[in-house]
Image 1: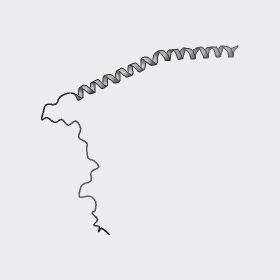
Image 2: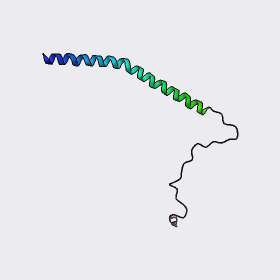
Image 3: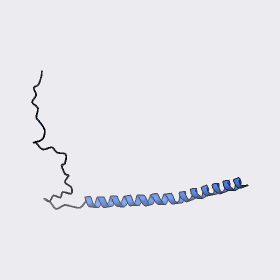
Image 4: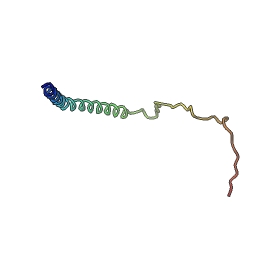
Length: 82
């Protein structure tokens, strides 16, 4: 009797969960799609802003930490062998 009650409750919970997932997942995905579209529109508006002619805007200048100064290292002479 206890086993039948457990199986009945388990099956009932599974059906309720499946019904909720079928209702809630489309809403969640639609919300994510809307957010992505809004971000795309914002990026497009940012890119389409006209710069005054002759003006240059630099957003990012990378640091050259890996560049080796000319005073570092040795120069090795070599002869080409034919």
